[in-house]
Image 1 (cartoon, rainbow, N blue to C red):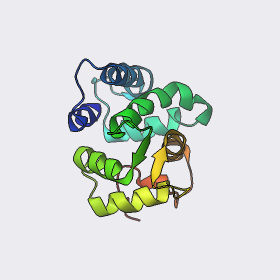
Image 2: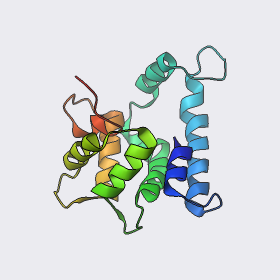
Image 3: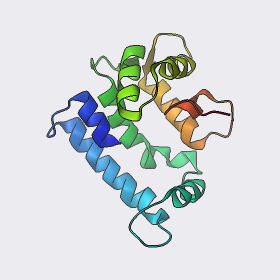
Image 4: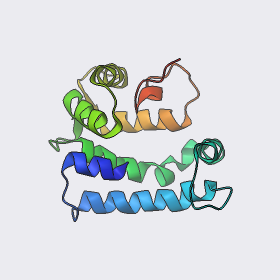
Length: 152
């Protein structure tokens, strides 16, 4: 996923953001994902990932350690004009090109995540959405669709 964001962003492979993202993703793999490999095959399949997330990502107090560093880098990659905010065009460009989220879904998801109606997601709004995505239990929460619409 990080490689797709880096490619879509056109970030230089030796840039600080790319280096931090690679380090963050390596740490996320080592500390969070790899221990989910129950059968020891060096891969984490969907069942292992689902069960692992249910076990590991249960305490929002661990967000700053487990998730925040990686998503700070993702924020920086999505913030194409580097103004400290993600506007709808940036959100759509990155999520459409990286995750294959259709434009109309991007617009709806963006509108739901932009809770203050400013037309942009600041870092706090972005982290609120990511926190809600990983730790929330509201089936109607806007962040459930962060990586594309989930059909109900």
